[in-house]
Length: 93
Image 1 (spheres, one colour):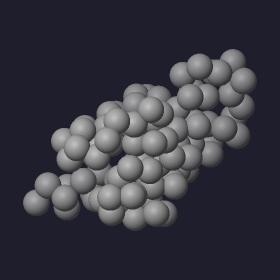
Image 2: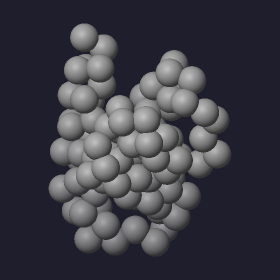
Image 3: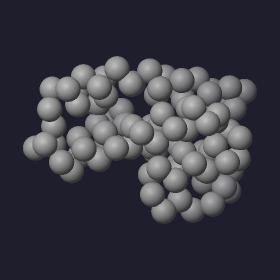
């Protein structure tokens, strides 16, 4: 489930980037850098979301190396996703 949440967050970020013609990101982290660069999200939110990309990749590609600590860490950081969703709602109003 956590992997799905992270994937949907990346998808939403990509939709915002494409919908606003902010460029063509070459990595998932770059999606959030473009949103920060264009002042659609603040630096702290952008860094938090970029850091979640690490966990997304770990969950999707290197799951055999996951520890209980990794799962706990990512679960604590999911509030960042809520903050991002709230910010996107503000932009849509």
